[in-house]
Length: 268
Image (cartoon, rainbow, N blue to C red; front, side):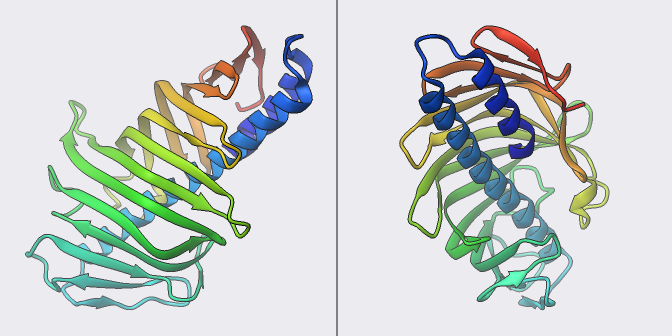
């Protein structure tokens, strides 16, 4: 979202600031907050994708240890069988692994699962032990629950993130919270390949920037995410960032509404 939203908002705010708002202060604050939100959102979306991938890998193994390659972590499963739950799945990136997607991760991600990923009612709680994503320390609790299939036969999950926190090397922290629903609309028939996945996201995300600027994002119309190439193909997102309220990003017709004015933007 950083590549899509931030440059556009910089240009628009510079051209449409109201008289009582100082562009140097407001624009910088909004753009900085958007950058930090994008980072937190990207890291926790990554956590969700990788945690689900780890659970799916554990489903195909009845050993306590799934060996990693130079580009993959080592996955430990306890109890080491295919029937007993709850099950603790530990994903160990050690002192640092440059993974296949080009991201360096280190530390430990722990997932406690009450059932397999595709099982109705199963819950998967992810926590962190000295875990870093490209030098950013990640903290909090990421909880996914399988809500079963919708009327179209697509799996739906609730996603809750509590006490989410991303800290950089200068001890600057971004707070992040999420209450959303994720519907798996494509790629479910190839569970070991996450790159053909597509999903719809609904709900809210909120938090606080490192400078204490509050932000809230509400999905007005489901966002359609595609993982490869990573993009949002449709949906409407409403944002409140600090003093600026009711920013509307419309992915259906490629427009953005700020301070009551609507502008085209190049996402199509």
